[in-house]
Length: 85
Image (cartoon, rainbow, N blue to C red):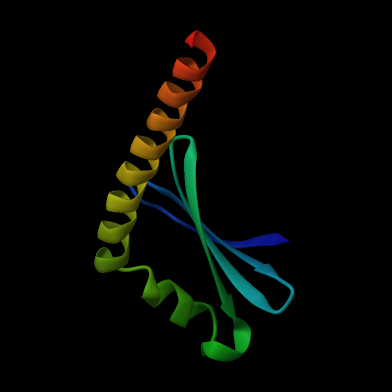
């Protein structure tokens, strides 16, 4: 898997990889990441993939990151409760 593009963003680390005839878009925020796989045959190239990474997608990503953090925090609470009981 090799990085073929890094997209600058003030909040996220956004990278596009090429691997096994797929584009892999990885969006990171802190300790969490979201990954999207797109077959090379489903798009017209790297520019198509980059066009998909728009404000609407990133707005959804931030909501998902918040939900992921809540899930992770709850998992920690449940782990601690299980140990203390």
